[in-house]
Image (cartoon, rainbow over all chains, first blue to last red; front, side, top):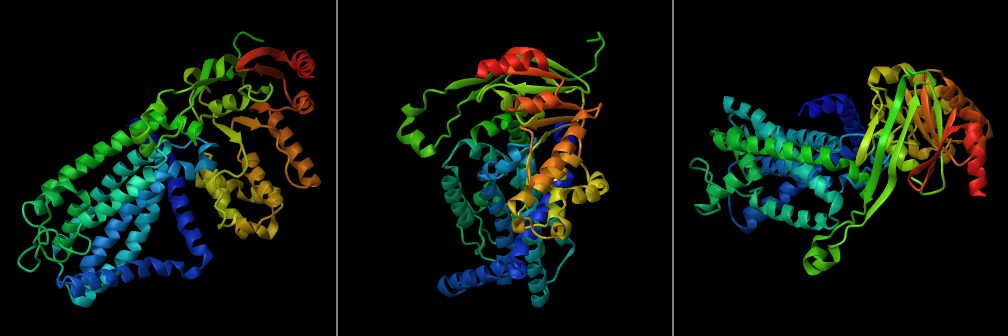
Length: 267
Length: 246
């Protein structure tokens, strides 16, 4: 733990700088590519609106914001996790030449996708203003929810990064699991009923189970509850997932410290 | 050597093994589990011990596959020895290498920061050296253009300048670098020489060229198949090594 803090301090500047560098180099090619950070969620929202409203005839209050929140949060999580699988191999140039705690690469990805999430969440703000969604002090819950999101994402990603070094077809497995996760996280439908206006699409008792056992479902549901529907988050579950995230992160960083010196020998 | 020599690098009975971690595939493990029974073990460095006093220049020779680069990487901290201890007595260390972590779409200037931070320097330290690096690299206006527009010569000039000017107390050099055109080659060689001969700096050079080592080094370590075959002054070791190799 002490080593983690020391290393984190030492390499923090590099992580910030290299995250910025990665974002910059994405924009460097064509200066309009940052527009895609908006267009992506916008177009996907239209797709899901079509499916949900036209095909399944379900109406949810503030549907576009509802989808944006789910989509942006999910995209952050899934992109970071997916990038982690081949992360060490992709950083071969660095890994074979200098020592850097390898989980720093995960922080770098969190920086990159976190920034994109913030940018695309501007859409949330804009549409919320457009719909004149009444916002209460409960919106402040966004801060702890985001913290839990980061901790959980880091925990999963570090462990997956470690195994990604040794298991060559892990990416195939992760892709399928993430696809499943996408449908089980209620991106374009509501898992549970919120208040009287939002009708849950998953029958009891599975709705409750899903929200409790799937951290992404929990985080997304709670973001919507506090921002759109003026209800309280499942704060006990949130606290539990925070601790689970911390434990996963500890396991992840510990195994990385233990095995990272053999990564060079594999890639 | 005096009794109370201050060592910069102490390598004590270091063994480095490559567990031939074959990559595994989940699918193959399920379908053909018997294929994964053996893990081969290959020992690249078999118990090497030596000390380098502060300020000294050590050359490491040996044929291909004798564990030279592996040892160098272990000293640089890129991977830890399986057995034994490497103690750098708190000195900063860098492995002089080309183009660490360059982002091709970014400018040379930004890449100086990127590489520098990766080598463990902070922003102010890099700021101080920035002009010197740019001047030494002879890139002129190109420094603000994306690295991908560089010729390969310019690329290595920049990379060399970064590592040569952001100096550390211990420098590890895998093959003496000679990059760029004839003029830059000469200049970089001179720079290397002045870096290396700085009395405070401890240097370990891995090279195949006896000539360079003769010019630069104080002592030579001869590795043969992961073990120390000979260690001593240049005049002693190098002729025997040459004889052995011919």
